[in-house]
Structure formats: C-alpha cells, structure tokens
Image (cartoon, rainbow, N blue to C red):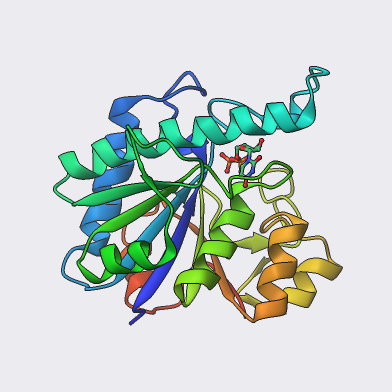
Length: 234
Ligand code: UDP
C-alpha cells in the first residue's frame, strides 16, 4: 500500500464533449472516481492539474511573448484546480487548493510544510499554478512536488491508454505495451511519459512513475493498494 502519492491529471480531463473548457459534469465524474478509489485506503493524495483544456501557453504559436503565454497557462491551472476542488467536495472529499502563484482570495499559497500537514489530516491537496515559473509544464510540477513532500510515486493519468507502448497504439494495432521500464529507457527511446525536464528529474532522484488509464474502473484503487497497473517506470 502506498502512503503518499501524487496524481497528475491533464486539464483535458475536465473538458466535456466540446474538447475544451471546463465541463462541471465531467469534472464531477472524474472527482467521484478519484474519491471512490481513495475511500478507506488511508493513502495521502495530492493532485497536480494541467491546463491544456484552457490554454496551451508558449506552444500556441501566436507570436505572444513566451513567458507571458506561460503565465496565462499557469493561471488556467488555478481555474482547473478550483473546478476540481468543487467537484471533489461535492463527492464528499475535503480538499485544499494551493497555488504556486499567490492568489490569496481563492487559494492558499503553496507552503511545503503546510501541504504535508493537510495530507496528514486527510485532505486532498490540489496544486494549482504549476511551478509558478514559465518554461515548465505541470509534469515537472508533479515531479517537483512529489520530491518535496516525499511522495513515493507519480501517477500519470492517461485517457484510454493503459500504459507506455513502443509506438502509438491508436495508430499501430501491433504496438507493444511495456509492463516496466527504467527512466533511462524512457529517455533513450523518447517514450511519451512526461516531458524531458520532468523525466530527467525523476531519473536523477529515483522517483517511480506509473502511467495508467484513469478511466478504466478499479485501476486507481488497485494502484493505491500498491498493485501493478499500467507501466511502472522504476
Ligand atoms: N505552465 C508553466 N509553468 C509550470 C506549469 C505550467 O508555464 O510550471 C504553463 C505552460 O504554459 C503550460 C500550461 O501552463 O503549457 C498548462 O500546463 P500543461 O501544459 O502542463 O497542462 P496539461 O497538458 O497537463 O493539461
């Protein structure tokens, strides 16, 4: 059984049929599945949420100043964090949103020791605002926060992909899924797990990663119990 874990969910998981924005019903479905999986396990859970459903930062090719575009992206993740908090609390789970960018009216500032205190008290902590610095992604936030608060694993939630494959399983019917990889394998083969900065940090610090399908019923609960699901990077 894991004691403390970080779950990384992409902003897209909050978008409904339209594929962008925040759909409260979709957020509630996601929140319910997380709360049900967590129920009674005693696992201390924090969630890092991305912002891809609202804004693509410096990658939107608009010619906008890259740092400014990234700051807008970070603000988007705070909106997502608030939406996920609302949904998690509707599902009965006490939560706290902590933002890396100070926004005192809507979120606590990120303070490492306070985050750990919330976890000890059984609250799910949702980290918004990324790292608070441009030129990063929320994959690096998940890694950084995991290392800071002593999480044992980063759970990289995917939608309808149940692990890491040697090629895209949606395009190649004979794509092979890996049960386990090393961080070096991921780097050498440029496998799509997390961005290069994030995977390098995990490798340097020996932090485990699991890539799994969050929408497959039972997966998250099995992971919380320490069972093997998806692909383990160790
Ligand atoms: N971002 C950033 N610094 C961070 C985290 C995020 O600048 O530490 C910005 C960046 O522009 C990124 C956007 O926030 O594109 C949304 O995050 P991400 O792309 O990781 O979201 P996801 O794809 O997981 O939904």
